[in-house]
Length: 339
Image (cartoon, rainbow, N blue to C red; front, top):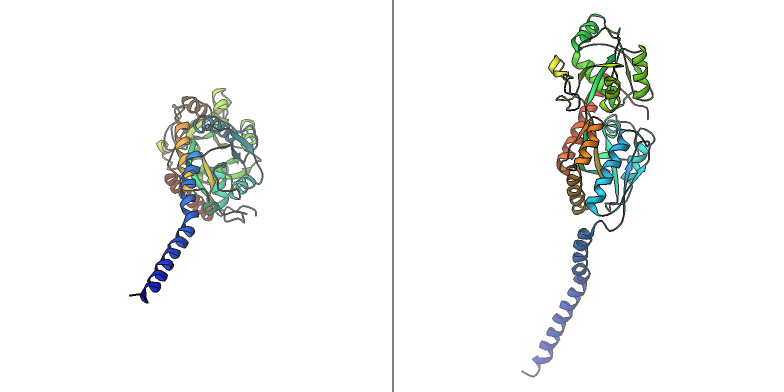
């Protein structure tokens, strides 16, 4: 028995050292895990930034600032709006795509970013891989407009004339490949008409020329269209969204008048794709609560839209469908954007 004792003690000592070594190796993980949980629970612990890739003063800026104001109340931290416009939203989108995925840098983005992706143009980011949606925030009506002196009193009046006189009518847009241009191209294809495209630097100058008779029709967002309709300067022939606008209930949809088309403007909230799911979920919960605010709902109505509110998964499905839709349309109509 005597000779075997040192061997037993040695084995016991070796096993003890192995257990201690394993415990030492696991210690950082055991300590880090509660910290991760606590970090998610504590988010946010400092102010957030909401990047709006448009100049101040437009509809996107109004939406961004309205959402930021309500998010502040839900998150208990300041949400500072930062306007980073340029290159058709590419500058602002790229800034957020390359930001740390800590939940403190948010992006307000919409159809412009999905069109850029759908176009196949060279971009400094991959929208689907480098950004993840938090929620769709807003959808807005688009309205087909003619001047008050136009001979067309109904949509069918205009469509019948355009079919009988291919290429005779002129339509103004906010520029080649913009959401307004693609909405108009979608309408023309659905109505089976040919018309001459006149691109402008923005919708406002296109509407000015519509009033002056330089172009025959324009599709515009309701924030710009509504004042001109109410003042009698322009006549609305159709809303191109799926249902009538609660703000302009007397304007029939294009589908009601025999043209099977649906277009709309929209905006959503995005974060870098490296953002932890727990933080995305926290931001989504705060966003959905913010969108229920009566104040926010009224603000959206004032610019011709309505609050949406979706899960991140639903928003992801929607964004991919938008990219697919625009990609197919641009390929079919041979619409190309400059790199």
